[in-house]
Image (cartoon, rainbow over all chains, first blue to last red; front, side, top):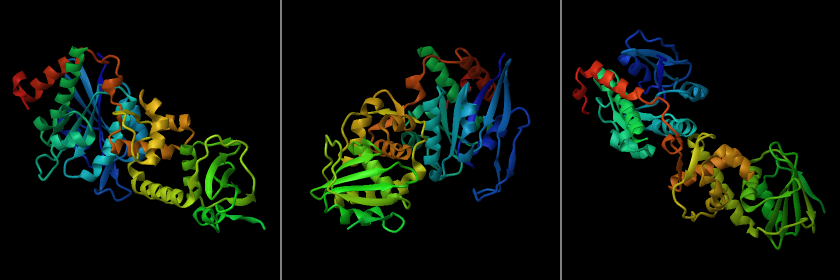
Length: 173
Length: 218
């Protein structure tokens, strides 16, 4: 059976690498490198993070894209043929919302890719909740979920929501 | 008397109030990003703008003048008493009001340049009320027909003959006003690509992380 991929996108430091490490069954292939500019942390993803989940005979790839704008060509490449897109944003970092919305607008208007927005750090208040993030991004409330990327049962939430939405859409069509 | 010089030494907003009191044409050339631009003045007002040999509509004229005000390279020469080959719809713009409007647009643009939409993001109309602001309503009226179907700044730039960044700016402003919104996949998608797979994955994933199908209730 052909493997499927889910793209995990978002600004620098939104928790993409943590999210994939938490959910992946296999050791995550990551490409963390020392940051060459001040991005608020010491290392960052320079190519992509890559994890896997086996569900029966179906292999699911999780691809984490680099957060910096200069890698935007990879967002497009990775999104092609993807099962869905998870956009992660830090709930305690509203300054990232505008560039994240720009990324979402671009990808979702270019490609027919289902998406869910995951608002991380819900365990570390004060944070924006999903119900406030949804209108800012101009998306229906069911497309935004909160999560703690370090907790497996919480981290899997946006993935489950994505699959629920795709299933509902299939049934409707 | 000859009036000529370089935009390096005299900017357009210094020059225009001076030359616009005379009837004639101000030719601006040796520009980095534009071919020759000719501004025609009559009765103290800007009546017509040509880019090369092509007369511009009001929206295109506004864009070109914004570029000229921001330009630091280029030469100019004023030719008195000359009239445009054709000027079917004279602009009739007073110079001081036009310069204030252009300056406001440039200031606003500088503030939002990092937040402008990606050139390929597709937008469509959300309602059909014409915006009050003349700068934006000119754009809205020209772009309306394309925005009905959904179009990106890149495509609009080609259709309207305007700089890409100006189209991105106007789309950003229209979005702030709630007049346009990005087109999401729901509206454009023809059929699900992975029919049947998602439901199976959903069941497996729930079992994996919660043990029981019903344990997932958040």
